[in-house]
Amino acid sequence: MMQDSIRFFGLGLGPGDPDYMTVRARKVLETADRLVHFCKRGRRGNARTIADAVVGASPEREIALVYPVTTEIPADHPDYAAALNPFYEEAAARLQAEVEAGHVVAVLCEGDPFFYGSFMHLWWRLKDRVPTEVVPAVTAMSGAWTHAGAPITWGDDVLTVVPGTLPEAELTRRLSGTDAAVVMKLGRNLPKVRAALGKAGLLERAIFVERATMAQERIVPLPDLPEDIDAPYFSLIIVPGHGRRV
Image (tube, rainbow, N blue to C red; front, side, top):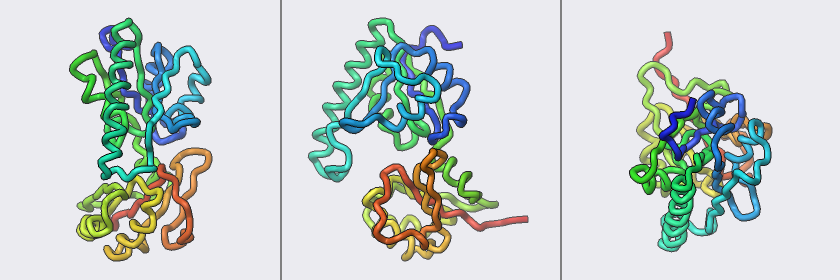
């Protein structure tokens, strides 16, 4: 049963397969007055697509937050923040108005809301203004290593999670000192990530996972992946540890 005081939810829906959605997430999804999802212009967001299995099309409940930019501008370029900051400010104000009008608002999040999620930019703007709950979820990386049949950490293995958007030298440095790794946010960064994994001595253990747990899932050992592939932004690489086993 939803607490009556909560009006704003960050709703983690899991990595893609709706069967991995939590009971709590499903309850909120079915009862919220407004279903909010981030998307590129002209497309439905991945999180909204996951929700289809539970709620289907609900035009009267939906609020699409259309990114002004996605990968057209590098994230470290000043123009990126200049475009995204007012977008998040306007989105937060819009959702606050919905809450103040008495509506229960759920922001749909692929994976977990607090793990590289756009929702966090709304959360820190609204958490002290409206009653808020974040519903955790199975992450994409957890779905990826499970479907790949690759236990990620053994014994005392140290796991490092890095975004592929880092410079190659920084990726190499961080990957060189770990037992197991997950590299998020691939997309156009794949060649750079592949090179960094090679320099760190991890290439042979690396596994490429595209759209983990979804119908279009693809799992390939990274050394077998063609060099010229266009990796989706929502793909990742896992490097299983090989520590203490008994």
